[in-house]
Amino acid sequence: MAMKFNKKTIIDIAIIVLIAAVAIFFILSVFKDSENKTTIKKSQVSQDKNLQSAIQQEIQKVAPEVSNVTKEGVVVTLEGKPVKNEATPGSDDAPKQSAPIKNLEQLPSQAIKLTMAKKGFNPLSFEVKAKQVVSLAITSGDSGLHVIKFKDPSLSAINMGVSSGQTRVIVFNAPEKAGVYEFVCDVPDHENQGEKGKMIVK
Image 1 (cartoon, rainbow, N blue to C red):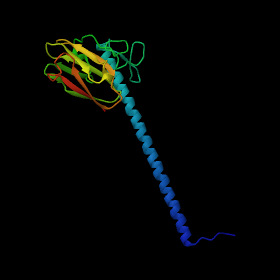
Image 2: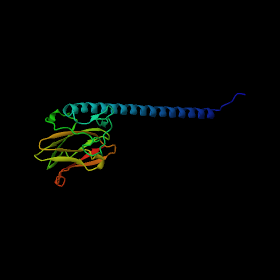
Image 3: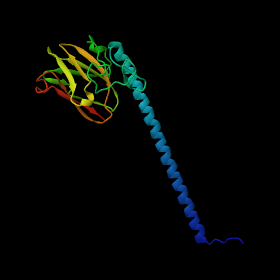
Image 4: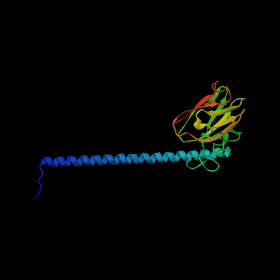
């Protein structure tokens, strides 16, 4: 026996089908947009790593003593193990600093360059991304000795001294945790005279 549909039933079915079609279209659109964003994000990460790798190659031409960096953007020891930013400065597990660099202009423009003097740091702060490879160049801007030190224990290995006119470089991974990491000059009384700054991790 054939089923009979009145006009109202047919209209109701048509509305349900239309709503289902719109819902499916919306879901597919959201999925495609999400896929595109993921692809863009992966592309940006790849570009960031390629840039970091290029910067590191330039750094090592000028400062061959600094720690190596893997293709994945991890700073490693001579044995190929990830360095420990919380290690004792100068130990096997700590990031290695360079010998004094004669020509600051040889450093790539992307390196973070800080000048230390009794009047303070210049610039006072810099920004990096979480886990980014940081190539930090420190220069003494006066006739005195200056030693950069981070206050956070998780960065205790980042400790480097420079005397009059010297520049040294150290390479390390920024912390995973976003936040403000204060650094100071560890020479007695220099911090009290205003020799302090901030690394902002985003």
